[in-house]
Length: 130
Image 1 (spheres, one colour):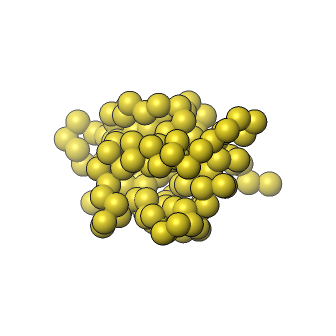
Image 2 (cartoon, rainbow, N blue to C red):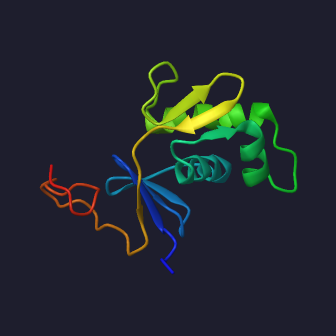
């Protein structure tokens, strides 16, 4: 049985699922826990429509996750990722239905990718040249 993913890569970001951290290259990005959970759920379901109900059940299980809370987290994620709702690179809004993570992703079951080389020659993706 394959080892579950411990990292999700979407250029130039990396989600460290075990540590609950978001990285941009070798720099940790400040993110609140609920926003991280929303981003994780969207990235784990990349390419699929994720309804607000799906997000509420996954992220606010056992408590009330309102549409306003979800919208606030998505707005925060767009700010953190430098995304634009009108021309999304990461999170697309599907009118009155939910969201879709549209960036290409790679899952990694192994150890984290080492920080970028000092000269910047390494990419955040394993086995990829610039």
